[in-house]
Image (cartoon, rainbow, N blue to C red; front, side, top):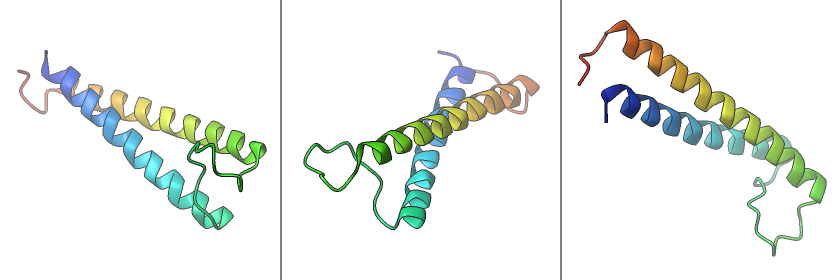
Length: 84
């Protein structure tokens, strides 16, 4: 496995994790309660709220992961670090 694949994979995972945490904080700040977890026993969350959260969080996480992967790939291509 080459170094570029490792770096871009780690960057994508880190960006997805960070975006997910940020979304949770913003959701709690805007709505005043925890984001939906998909727990079937949670009767407090409406279907509309669940759909909005899923769409927004999915789009933001996908954007963050794509941006991080591309940025890491460009950084590796510049040759700032030695390729393994």
